[in-house]
Structures are given as structure tokens and as C-alpha cells.
Length: 345
Image: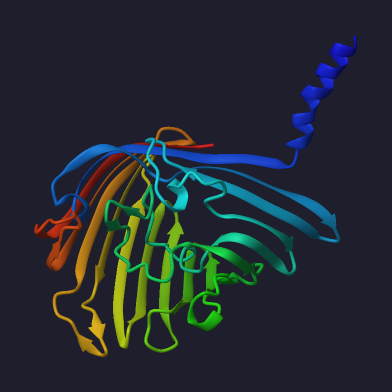
């Protein structure tokens, strides 16, 4: 009798413990063929993970409209490989993870490992998988000082007010070994709008640059807008990136256009993006720009499972060098093909 009672109690414990916890995730993998800087511009075909992840999240009602909120998310490589950092590192909580407080009138404040302002401003990136595959960005943005998850971060998100919302984030650098003990960090903010299918966002982010000859910060300004209704998705993005190296200031402007249209279970989609020639100390550096196009189609096999095929090509204004050690190979194009499957749960 006691054994039966113990068995009932033990069976009930996990249910009670998990009552306010949601388990979620996305399993993504495919076959890719890549030719670019990372492999001497020769085609390499293999199985690749497309940013798979699993997570746990929950909340607790604290009364008077206040809630405690939390999330722990972990990325992993379904193909069995790993990386030194990021979601393929094998470390626990290597994707957005946090604890915080939320109130419908005030908004929410979170502490932890949090997506930055530019990660929240990627309307032209509708592609399945990591934002960077091989050496190709989706779309062709510089990605400097942003599009990342910040460590040691505090973030505020406002409630929606007549379609508008606001977020601000600061990632502290707790290593005081650089620049005489002065803390260096990342700060960003975003103003967003969404109403009747139309949406937009304006983001700014800055990152301290200890490699500059003076106390300078790298800066990114990004503006996006679009329409998402009646099976049609349209988005446009423009950004300016300003960075410093020694006493030199470099500016780059990037642009992207994306469109998709859902017809039954099929969603064809395309992105065109381009990066203008860099300017160093105000002078244009010829043949430093690039153009990219990406095309693909998603097939919704069910509400949770999607099959996809996509192709992207980057054409540089001038040939670029291979990143393979001791290689002298150059080319002006990088290409990637991918077919795969994504299952959300």
C-alpha cells in the first residue's frame, strides 16, 4: 500500500512542478551546398543545422497586475558539430535567457542574456536558419555592433500605446582590464509601430571601441518598414554603420528589400540587398560594395512542420580573398543552396 502511495506522489510531483512551465523549441536541418571564402570558393555539400533550439519559459502572478517572468533557451547543432561561442557552443542557456517583472501598464524589465535592439529590427530577414550561413549574411548587413544577444544585460520593453512601442537595452562589460578600468558596453534603443498590417521600426545601437585611438564608439542606425496582411509580406530596411580603427572612421550604408506571398501551403519569397562602397574619413573606397539576392519557397506540410528550399548569391564589386590558410584564391561571388525541414513544438 505504501509503495502505491509513494508511486502516486512521485508521479504527481513533475506535474505540479511543471504546471506554470512551457516547453517549446524548433528543430531545423537541411542539406546545403556552399561555395565561398570559407572553402576556397569550391562547392562543399553536407548536412547543416539551421539554428535549432529548445527552451523553457514561465510566469507567476504576484498580485496587483504584476508578474514574474522567466525564460531559459538553449541552442544546439543537430548535425553533431559545435562552435566556440554562440548557440552551437554546447553551453547551457546560450540563447536568450532571462528573469524579470511584467506589468500591463508599465511594461517589462528583464535581466540576463537578451536580444539587442538590432535583432528586434530584422524585418527583411524571413529566412529559415541562422542569420549567417557559410559566410553569407541574410540580408547583406554589416552586422557590426549589433544583431546579437547581449551578456550582462538589462532590457526594458514598453506596452503598446496606439500602435507604438519602445525598448531600450544596455549590456555591461564587466571586464575592467581595458582602458584604465573603464567599463565598455553596448547600448541600444528601438521605437516600433504596428497597426492594420503596417509596421515600422527605428533602432540605434552603439558599442564601445577600445581599439580606437580616441574614446570612440561604433554606431548603427537602422530604419525598417513594411506591410503584413492578406497573405502578402513586404519589408524594406536601410542602415548606416560607423566604426573606428585606430584614428580612421569607416562608414557603410546597407539596404534590403523583401517580399513573400502565401498561396495555400506554398510561400515563395525573395530578398535583394546591397552594400554601398565604404567611406574612410569621408573618402569613398571604390569597389568595396556588394549585392546579394536570395530566393526560396516554404511548404507548410502542417501547422508545425515546414519544408523549405532556398538559394542565395553575393556578388562583390571586386574579388575577395579566400579565408583558407595559405590560399591565394580570389573570387567575386559566394553562393549557397539549401533544402531542409523545420519542426516547431
